[in-house]
Image (cartoon, rainbow, N blue to C red; front, side, top):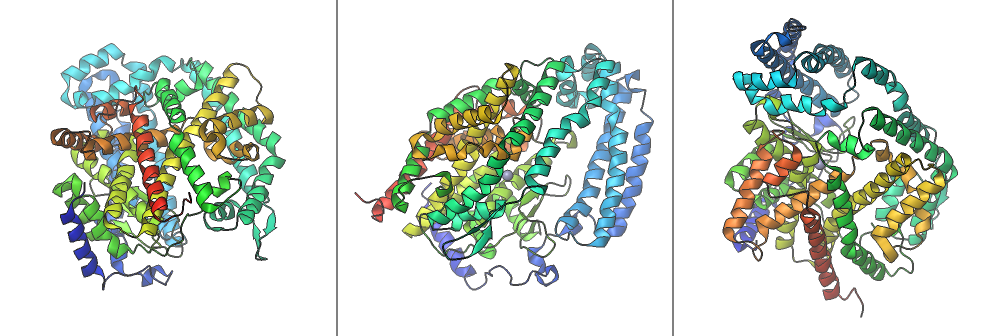
Length: 636
Ligand SMILES: [Zn+2]
């Protein structure tokens, strides 16, 4: 990976850009931000008139779709025609909605847009009604055997084999009409725990105030707690905010436990009704993922905690702390001024993508040059960042770039999503373009791996290198270890309900502390302080979701190693790994995610992907240790 030519080129680009790059604008007035930093939505529609014209087309397609109702079993040609119409409708509706939605997220107070959004919601309600009958009618009127014959007979259907047979796969868990009706009656009821959770944890909660060492008074909200971990250099201040923030969860621990119990019971009810073996199996079955994949990943992470614990021990020593707690995990080891200006990032990010080849870089370049980004914060613009595809056009990325290192990695991350979407959209027809969440974070985290590599190659300043390594390690901690620790706890509590064990604040605390200790061991002091962390995590209301962060980043670590590790792999093997990876990015949702990954050399039935992640963590912690030693920050 050490390519002097690349470094030279980058240095040159840096020099050329030196006069030109701009820091983030002073203004928050969107109108005053130059057009080159705002996305160009005229690629979707030229103006509102053309948008309006498509609305008529969408309505006419909805009318057409109705004419198929009750007729799908007539024969393969009728079914094929229905698919063609419904896909045309879906594609157009998506495009039509994107035009409004993308304008609304950057201009949330605009009343005209609000009205258009309402128009959109009304049309979408009709759209989902127009589509709702299709799958049930197929399943109820066309037996699987008949369908298999039709797939051979009719090319349009044959091309959609994966999608169509996927409908039948979960059929054994669908009840008869009466049963489904009864289940549907319970849906509001089952949503109640989640609604109660958000009422209690957001609307009703009153966070206490604390007085900091400098005399300032702050309210210990979610935002303050998050910021305190990263910016309060005084440990006592961090502790105060932490204690105050968590006191609200401690005070209501029994209520939170009871809400969680409601969610668990509701899942167990559905699990039994649909005759799954476990709640985990029911949730993972959507993507056809065996429970063992998640269970293995948890065990692999537990077996690979050495670098995580060593990271904590190093930090404890460098920060000179007597006791080390969770709220000490994020305060930077070094304080540096290192702005990452957007204009400057453009050449750097593109250079970091060079290993993917000229075609890939060329496409990424278009993102910068053709208005795919909306870069800066402005009044009325949503916070955060995302990449959102518009099939037949190109993806758009929203950032709130404020020149920090985090922002720079966010850009690399979102661009990874965008490239995945670009390659899938140009390769796949509309019906198979959508990739699943299970694979979604592979390209984004891959973009981060390569950007980190590039920065480490081109950065000599030890403080900057320490900051980079810390950032990368925190990402792995946050997406791999932490999420699998949550998954471990989640898995246990669902199992407890299945085994008829009562769920109380005490049992949840015990299970949570067990998971916490399995990951952090003695590298974290006063673990009992974290007994109610489960109450703070909204994700548990969405069962078996978090483990997917870990699988994605583990997959990208393994693929990354295969593409870049010159000691382990021959040039041919590395080239093959790259080709397989690009094929994965081009495959949209054309197969089960496990299969897509297997074709790219990532076999989730083995511990290998998880082990690749642990190896990457080990490598980064080693590097960090070496840098700190060089600076004499590690003492003896
Ligand atoms: Zn992402």
